[in-house]
Structure formats: C-alpha cells, structure tokens
Length: 235
Image (cartoon, rainbow, N blue to C red; front, side, top):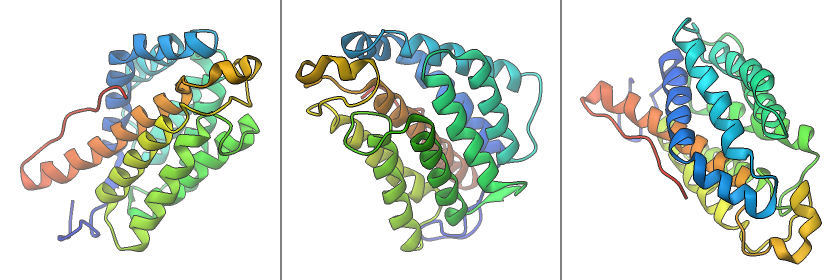
C-alpha cells in the first residue's frame, strides 16, 4: 500500500487477488452447510456444495502456480469454476470473474477506479448470463448495490480498501433484502410466495465472497502498516 488518509493511494496487486481467492475458499467452506440450507429451502440444495468444490479447486491450482497479475488470477478462477462447478453457480461466478479479469487486463496493480470497473464488469456478466434484474431474488440483488456503493466511494476519493468495504457492506444488506422478495428466476420461482422469508443463496454467497475481497484489501493495507484482518463469516 502507498498513500495515506482514506487510502486513495493504495493499489492492489496479484498478492491481493490470490489472498481474496484463498479467503473466499475459506469462507465458502466455513459456510458450506449454511449455503446448502438456504438453497435447500428454495432451490435444489447444492449451492454450498458446488461452490465449496469450485473454490477448493481454485486453491489447489494456486498451490501449483502463482498468477502474475490480478487479471490472471481472476481468469484462472473463472476457468476453474466453469469446469468444476455444476448448476447455475459455476457459469455465473465463472462469468463474473472472467469479465472482471477482462476489465483489468494485464494491469499489475489496481486502484479504486479499476476495482469499480472490475466489479461492474463482474455484475454485468452475471446479468448477461443469468438474464436477471434487481428485485428478482438473485445474486444481482447483492452485486448491484455493491457496485453502486463501490462507485460512490471511489467518486469520493476512497481507496481500494474503503471501496471494497463499502461494496461488501452493501452486498450483505442486499442479500438480507432478498428475504421478503418473491423469486422470479430459477427453481425458486416455482415456489411463488412460498419463497418469501428465505434468503437467496446466491446473494448470500456473493456477500461472503465480496467480504473476502474487502478483508484481503484491509489485510493488504494493514500489512503495509503492520496489521491484518480476518476472513468474514455467514450472514
């Protein structure tokens, strides 16, 4: 990390991206059963199992190779998730990471504006792949407020850690806000009003993964100043 104040001079490199992916794997594993239970209530019950398998495979790849840039790490994660995760989660998260990787290109370090571009591209990828919109009780209900919060912080000259913390906070609030919604997409849509009162598992996992990104950024900032931050927990 460089710079001071709100961290506007901070940049995040490949080490941050790798730490994000490893933290994501840890938090998904920690919350595997919780995600299964959320999905079992309104879906087919495999969301936690599928994501855990995918991120475990990502960690196995990271143990064998070290991506040189954040974009390379994102694309590796995308290819792994698409090949290892079945159902809707693999293509959706794979597309999100692939679009994020494309957005940042070969940059070796990401500032706040590049992070917003990556998050926006990831969200747009999920929208395109899932043909979903806000308010339909899907991952988008976590990703869209996350993108909006990140953009607002970046516009206010917030640094990467601040931007990602705002995104994570907004994603968590967005996931909670799916509780009273009627599902319009996927298996949950067949339940009609019976889906009310249940949190969307994709929104919940999105919040966990974005919190892992924020925790990794905070750790990156803390390591420059002599501190660190733990991974997040379930909703």
